[in-house]
Length: 266
Image (cartoon, rainbow, N blue to C red):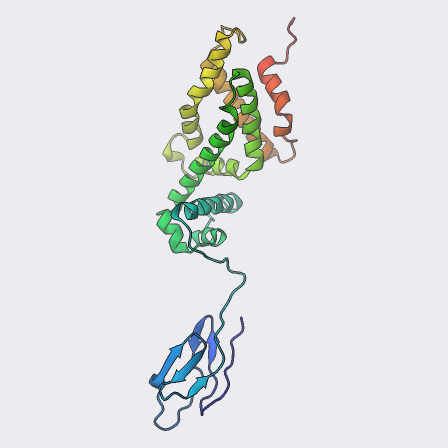
């Protein structure tokens, strides 16, 4: 916003407002007049203690391009910071991501971001954790109400592929975690997989109990292979960049996983 020049009045030349602060430029003094005689009121007037008006125009400093900041609950603000961080990390990578940019995208101050997360690494790992929690919730909220284990598996495959198609930045986060923090050990995705794997393994076991799955197949191995194949399908679709939607072909993928490629008589 360009500086405002103020009117010459009462023997005082114009000052200017620069970048939101008040600069008193080009003043000359009458005999006995001191700058210390001024009282500043940002409600619209600057007056001298003698009561004589010096500035008549109100001060307006605005920047419409800057996100409006409002008071929000800590949990809501934390969630918004994580959402902004996921986009920025995916766009520019962990090393080039700046906390200022994340704060700007979240519509928050940099200090607010640091109050939520002590460091950029802490913020990044929390962003990966949130992505995994969102994935787990997206799949489970649709699958858990079902009773048939085969339908649970089918729908689980569809929701899993659909989540990554709607949130491609999540794959970028997984790649960056392994690249930037190899000393952290096992990536968080596989930690979460171990935590939730028991529920899916139990569904394969139930299929064996119902006589619908080959009894010589290991439920644990089936669960791991299904998970690994889907994980690979998600990565290959994103990295290739020109492959058709895997979520749209989820039914065919399910058939391939459950029935294989051979005819029953083969």
